[in-house]
Amino acid sequence: MARYFFDFYDGAMHRDSIGFDCSGHESVRTEAMRALPEIARERVYKDGDEQAYTVVVRNERNLTVYTATLTFTGFWIGEEEPPTPEPSDQSIPG
Image 1 (spheres, rainbow, N blue to C red):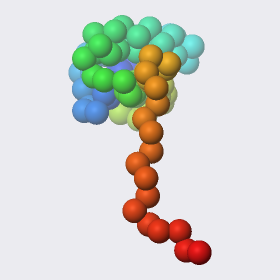
Image 2: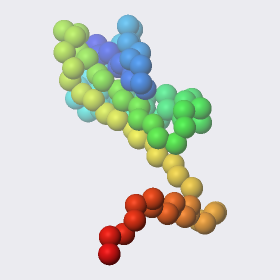
Image 3: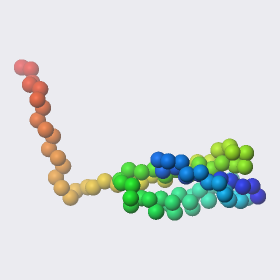
């Protein structure tokens, strides 16, 4: 097994100094898929309606071998009338 490091980016980079032993590409992918929702769960309710969380996986030689991003986008629908556009200050030529 080889050691891989799972760095996390949420607007700031959080470097993994410990890493995980993974048996191959599928294991690296699975660990990244597990890590993203767990990390985002702690932050998503604090960070607003548009967020992206990224895991960047490095191998023992410090080369990036895999990256994955989880995006959260939230918006309100239908509770209020949409805002009315302000009238234009420009006169219509005629």
